[in-house]
Amino acid sequence: MSAVTVFGLCAAAAVGLGLYGLIANPQPLRKIIAFNLLGSGVFLLFGIVGRRGAAAAFGNDPVPQALVITGVVVAFSATALAIALLLRLFQIAGSTTLDGPAPASPPSDPSGG
Image 1 (tube, rainbow, N blue to C red):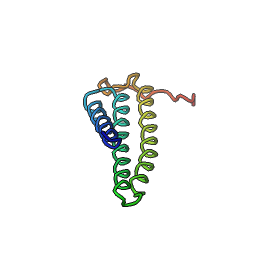
Image 2: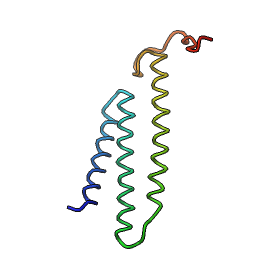
Image 3: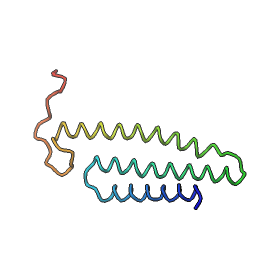
Image 4: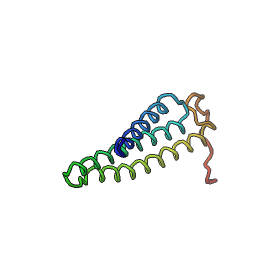
């Protein structure tokens, strides 16, 4: 079994586990983690595509590498935004689930103003 095959299987496992976690878990934080796992699997698949192109004597294809680097940056910022929104939801509703009733009044300003 070659290294490319092992990486391909790991990428498929990461995508599968991430997709399962995204569908099966109702908690938003677990969904965020599952989405990151799914994205990591896709990035690994892009890395394999770039490696296979280089192994087939086509030369190094910079497009998959550029996509992975851009994707990592976008995934990091999207995760930070999602966690910030989740923390804000927890401050307002006292829970991170979307099942509960809406708050009756807007919360007080946390800065004291």
